[in-house]
Image 1 (cartoon, rainbow, N blue to C red):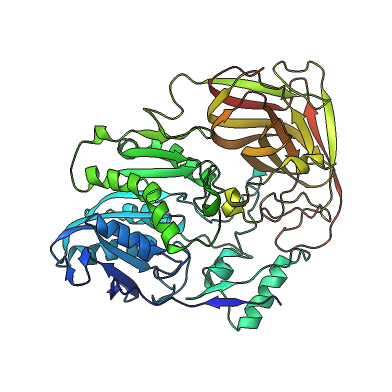
Image 2 (cartoon, helix red, strand yellow):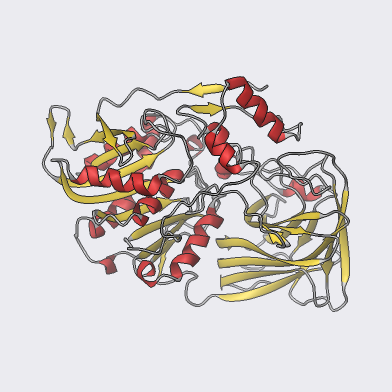
Length: 555
């Protein structure tokens, strides 16, 4: 049994006063209220409020909410920071996702009744406290005037749906079943690690719950027989009243596929699309940047470091709220799309994403390891081994903080169980801006094949930076099938002298749960078997990579 570290709530900030907000079913939600002014001269006159609802301790060091509240109050906002139901000081069950719509509504209603509130509310936050914004917006409360969700998605954390008869599905993240056993097990955070050398993950989960003497409600609703309780009463989070949204996505955020799925869903709802503003930054889930000052590329930052970094994180939301909450300026003052071309300085603006003027280019893999413009006429195959006892390792120790370590992925391409395809050296810079997809016709002598495709920028010194990735699972894989793999979106400058590289493999462990080779549930484990996989190169089913180019020419 691994060591378990229990993290209780931190002391509440002396800059705030504590409130307990009663929901419609009697649960008390612990909240900290921050008012502008000084400790000696607090401004209690009615004003605009920013609400932050999170499960990671409103008073703790991890999310530094007291420092964020300090920054917002310096700009004249009242701030309410709240532990979601069942977490830290809030009562109720620690049940993931399903209560956030009503709890968000009830909290906003309470805010509007306070003497320091003028009835206008905005919301801000990352990850789960980005999700709580989508949920509150879906509640339809008229006082919610704008939201600013970052690195999140409306289907955040949900296990892979298992539909009978489907041959393709997403590959399950390794964190999916651990999250309800750590962050959402009970009021406190519970930190413990799986033994990666053991593949009986479900058994380890049972050992953990036996050790602490109770079961986890959120875990039991997801495993082994998933009960996917509805998150949004209207079905779609975008079915009802819309609010202006500043929607921030990170190029290296491991949750970015969920964000891009919401972008596509919003396009189908004109009332939401009319108020949707997209911001795309060169960050990962923990907001580390591709280009970061050396002293800031650390997990534990001082309060002074955090304060120095807050403007880059919070100022875009403040500018957005100035228009849509305070009514200063016009919607036309806010660009519909703000985005960074990674590898260059500053933010760009465009009316659409992808920007106007992009074009699609397709490159094909060859049997000799090339990546070329012309599709090989003759069909060929490349084979590789998937050995569940010797898995392709994940490149970063923490998938949520990929840019913290900024790993060189070139060594992974030296493995015999990774197919590598290299493009020619670029004679001039090329700017990529838009979606990347791959089409892979694959087969296996085992029942399930996971196909991981990584797009890399290889520098002249041989170092390889991952700039896009995607993965998809083929079931009944002894019968060949074609996988259409979404590698997400890219905004990236490929420099002259660099080259593109593609890696194809069958595992990325421990970020993703690995196949045993027998078709058994990866979370349960069991007997392991080596599989031989194949990829078609050339002919009608040739492996192809489709890129979106803004400027420059790919050879």
